[in-house]
View 1: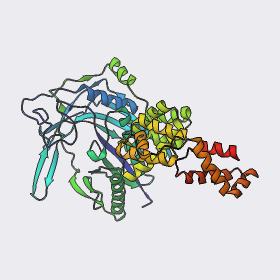
View 2: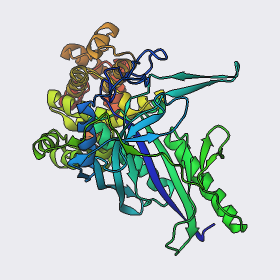
View 3: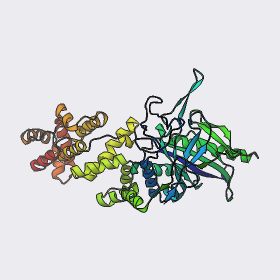
View 4: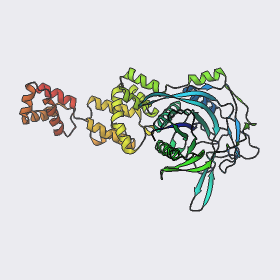
Amino acid sequence: MSEYETVIGLEVHVELASKTKIFCGCSTAFGAEPNAHTCPVCTGMPGSLPVLNKQVVEYAAAVGIATECEITSYSKFDRKNYFYPDNPQNYQISQLYLPICRNGKVTIQTPQGSKDIRIHEIHMEEDAGKLIHDEWEDISLVDYNRSGVPLIEIVSEPDMRNAEEVIAYLEKLRMIIQYLGASDCKLQEGSMRADVNLSVRKKGETAFGTRTEMKNLNSFRSITRAIENETNRQSDLLESGETVIQETRRWDDTKGYSYAMRSKEDAKDYRYFPEPDLVPIVISEEWLDRIRAAQPELQDARMARYQKEYGLPEYDASIITGSKKMADLFEETSKICGKPKKVSNWLMGETMRLLKEAGKDADELSLDAQSFAALINLADSGAVSNTAAKEAFEAFFKDGTDPQQYIEEKGLKSVSDEGALRGVIEKVISENPQSVQDYRNGKEKAIGFLVGQTMKAMKGKANPGMVNQILKEML
């Protein structure tokens, strides 16, 4: 096995975040009743004519700029002819000859260092419908809600050599596109899909081996498993003197293996020709300048700024900027409370813990920055203990409960009444003469025990700052 090298290229389909479809006014919202978001255009009715959605062009160009592509100033749509039940027109409007973006790259980081993954092209196209197979009734149904949803297809060069590089590339692409707001890139909803083109060859060889295309990959886990499985399958075939067949294979993540869908030994003739119902797209320099000017600060730039401006460690900055939602929450909360390091600590600690327990991604965060900042200020001032603040935060995270209201209702505010605290502290001092003596002999840590005993006596409700202050004064 070690004498073989894996060569991988990806075709990544991304559903764009426009409110309407690429060539009609139907909604792109996910999860509607079957065939609810359809019209004569997206169901391929005779005589209907497509009208290009300008937002789709701008999203595609924005992704191209962010991935260092050359933007084609004069691009066209083409018809890709094929016959399948989920393709109502019997053709797909795509871009073959003049795609909107070419010759880009994405730089990934792996344990082996940084590496550039070249992008061959990015083109715009429309999605097909979706077939639903009912095994009980032994029938197939078709839902055309997805038909006409705008896509970009990002075609890489075969520059990846293992699953680790593939996942790093996909994560970087997803992050760029999410920061741009061009797509939510939810693999589980199909808004980001990857087809893996994979071949193996003897190490040191320059010619490519026979490749297969792997489909039905809807999570990073399934992509990793499929790559490892297909690498082993092809290597075993070559090792035993057999031939790898060029084919499309479907991955079954439940069973952990792939099976052949169709042979690709003979190239399929899609009979591409220029789309006669759409005019060419001319992107002027002025239009391109407006798209460039609207580009947001992407993850790499934010990460560097957070380290420089807020003094965050590199690891913390990478985790926080790893989700645009978390990065936006960090910035907004920091602006309100003026305590970026405290905000970072809460995000890296309690927030990450609760996300992990709930099995959620940081992209699913929906915390209100104003309430979050108020809780941080309460905890930092000593108005509530750390334990009480964490309890309030958990309710805030799980149910959206206002933390200040929660603290009031549960009676979690710290006791800051100096008279009440002095009485408890006097009792603690009288009951712990050894710790008092240790502190007076120069053992600073001894006061920590006395603070702990006071907090225990106050059931965690004493203001720790005042306890420290009064203890030092009385000692």
